Image 1 (cartoon, rainbow, N blue to C red):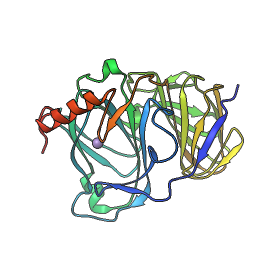
Image 2: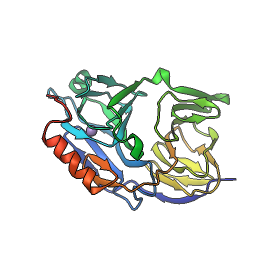
Image 3: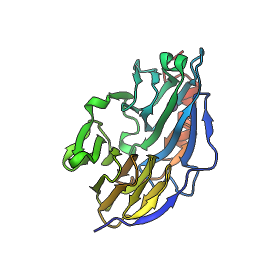
Image 4: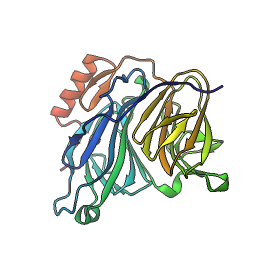
Amino acid sequence: MKKSIEKIIQRPASPGMVGDGFRVFHYIPGTDISQRRISPFLVLDFNAAYDFGPSKKVKGVGVHPHKGFETVTIAYKGSVAHHDSAGNSGVIRPGDVQWMTAGSGILHKEYHEEEFSKQGGPFEMVQLWVNLPQKHKLTAPHYQAITASQMGKAQLPDNQGIVNVIAGNFNGISGPAATYTPANLLDIKLNRDGALVAKIPATHNTALLVINGSIAVNDEKTAEHSFVLFNNDGEDIELRALENSVILLLSGEPIQEPIASYGPFVMNTEEEIYEAIQEFQTGKFGVLS
Ligand code: MN
C-alpha cells in the first residue's frame, strides 16, 4: 500500500544565517511541521546551493555547545571542516556525511574548508538534528566520519540513478551510519525519467526534500526545494524524476518522549535544560579554541 502524502510545503521565503558560513532555509522548525510530528528529527536546515565567493577568512560558525541529540551534516557541494572538544576533526566533501553524537555534551565549530573557502564556488548542504531517546541522551560524545565511498550503494537498473544509503536500508542494502533508534537516510540521485519505489515502515515518520530538480511523488509533481511529509499509513513511496534530480529521504521511528529544547540543548525536561546550561557555563563540555 502506498504511503499517502500529508502535505507538501514550499521552501521558506527567506534564509537565515548560521554564523557567516551557512545560509540555511529552516524547514524544521520554521514551518508548520512540529518537532513532535517529525520525531526523531528535530531540525532540518537546508543551505540551498549558494556561492559565498572567494574569501581569505574562512566562513562558518565558531565554538558552540550541543547536548542530548546528534547533528548530521550532509555535503552536496563544497567542503565543511569540523573540530570538537572530544578531539575529533575532519573535512567532509560532496557525498560525505558527518554524524556527530553530542550525547552528554560537546563543544564544536563548523567552517568552510580552507581551500574551498579561498576559491569559492557553490556550497550546498543539509544539517539534520536527530534526537536521542532518554536512555541514550548522556552517551559519551562521538563522531562518525562517513565518506561517499562508504555509503551503501543501490545502483538502479538501466542507468536510472543510484541510492546512496547513509543510514538504515534500501532494497536490502544497508548504510554505514549507526543510529540509536530505527531510521533511514537516503541520498537519492535519479536521472530524468528514473524511478524507484522505497519501502518504509508505516510507523516511521517520513519526509523527503527535493534538493535539486523536480520529481513526481506518488504521481504528484513537486518542484525543486519542496518538502513532502507523508502520512503514517502505507509503506511504498514512488518517485519518478521529471529531470535529473537529487532527493533526501528521511524516516524514523518516532521517539514517544517529551521534548524540552533550548537553543543547542534538547532534553526531556526543563530541569535537564537548566542543568545543561550550568554545565556549559562551568566548562563541563571541555575546551575548544
Ligand atoms: Mn553545531
